[in-house]
Length: 333
Image (cartoon, rainbow, N blue to C red; front, side, top):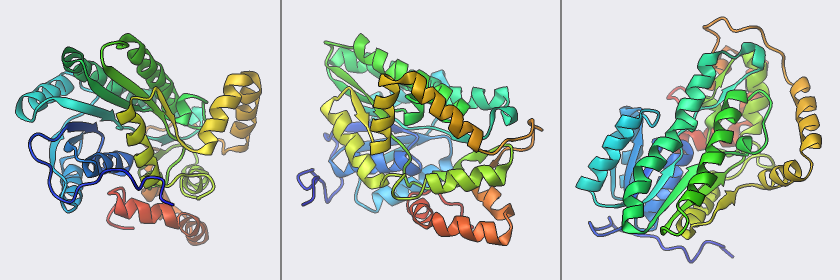
C-alpha cells in the first residue's frame, strides 16, 4: 500500500489564487525535490539559488510537469538580497504561505586541511541563510496570523560528524535558530519546522568539495551518500519533509540512522563523543591546507586511478542516477 496515496497532486498549472511557496536553494538536489513536491500539491512556486543557469534547468524540469514556477537569483547569505526578494515576491506574486530553506554546501576533510574560509562559507550559507530567510518571511506571516517555515538542518547539526566540521558547525547553529524561532513565534499562527535529514541519494557527493587526501576522502564519503542501507530515497524524503512542514510539526527527523543517532546522543553524549572520536581516527589524515586543494567530487573522481575510479562508480551508481535526474550532475558523467 502506498502510504502517500492520499496526498493531493495537480495535473495542470495552479491559478493565481493557489497558495505560494518560496524554496531557497531549489535549483538542484533536495531543494528541487521539495519544490516539486510542494508544486504537486497545488502550490505556486518561487525558487531561488545563486546560479541562474541551474535555476533555468530546474524551472524547465518543473514546468514540464505542469507546475507554476518563477525563479529568482538570490544568495541567501546576503540579508539585503533576501529582504528584497521577499518584498518583491509578496508584492508581485502574493503572500508567501510556505518558505523552506534548503541551501547548503558540503566540505569534506580533516581539521588539518581546513581553513577559516571553509567555516565562513558554511556559516554564511547554512546558518545566515536560514536566519536571513526566516527573519524576512516571519514578519509578514506573523502580520497575517499564518504561515509555515521549514529549515533544513541535518543529522550533522545534532551529532557532530567527523571530517565535516564546518558543515556541522553551521548546522548546529541552524538547529538552534530554527527551534528558537518556533518558540518566539508561538501563538502567532506561524509554525517553524526543524528538518534533520541524514544522508540522501541526491548525488550530493558529486558537488561536495574535498580537502586533504581528496581521493581517500571521496572514497568513504561517496558510497556513504549513495548506498541504500545508509542513504535515503530523496523523493520519499521530500514528501516526508513537506508533510511535516505543512502540518507545522516541530521536528522532522529523516532516516533510521538520524533518529537513532539523535536519541543515543541525547541519552549518552559522552559515549557518542567517544564513538565519533574513534570514527574520526579511522578516516584519512590530511596535510595542512595549501589554498588550492579544495575541489568538487566529480573532479576528484576524474583524478582517481582506473581501478579505484571504477570501484567508486560501481558503488555509487544509484547516486549518479539521482544526480542526473535532479540537476546535480555535471554534464561529463
